[in-house]
Length: 205
Ligand SMILES: Nc1nc2c(ncn2[C@@H]2O[C@H](COP(=O)(O)OP(=O)(O)O)[C@@H](O)[C@H]2O)c(=O)[nH]1
Ligand SMILES: [Mg+2]
Image (tube, rainbow, N blue to C red; front, side, top):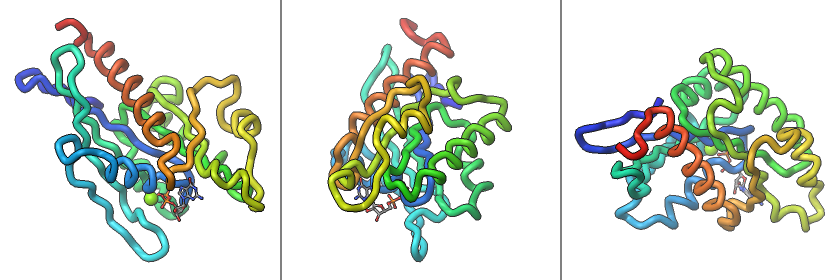
């Protein structure tokens, strides 16, 4: 749930990067963190563990300028990947104002992508929300591997698997190289801020 501070004229939004383990969520945040100026970004918090970077969540606070006289502050979160941590993922998801579903283009991860999206749908439902109600964009990551010998999934197939009817905007990305990272962030930020300000009737206040 977005926090609106009328006295300071600030809007705080929470955007969660969701997706199967090792699809590149933390890599997205690290790229954003490294590219942003000191003025724009807060401290990135990441708790690492052996084998998996994200133990609980990664958190990156950003200040994204003004909309309708309000300062926009955004907190980017990622969820941990291992099957074991479903409860943690659900906690991190709570109150999300916007979602980025990061899919892994590796063919071996096809079932994991579908399962993760199903889990997201289920968790949102348990919070009384649904996919489509919360602004969401998809990111098809690791597109750099398409030209490698490792089997990957084509964009059309990813669309059929995860985004039938192209309900959500989707971006091809290679997060390690930064390709598509800011396009994804820009689109989800725009949609989230629009959603939050319209919901709270803040535009023009
Ligand atoms: N080739 C390739 N590897 C990637 C890409 N994005 C992430 N990775 C690698 O995938 C692994 C898991 O990434 P990470 O960001 O920790 O995944 P997370 O579990 O979703 O947070 C790391 O070794 C990354 O370097 C990408 O676009 N292309
Ligand atoms: Mg991670």
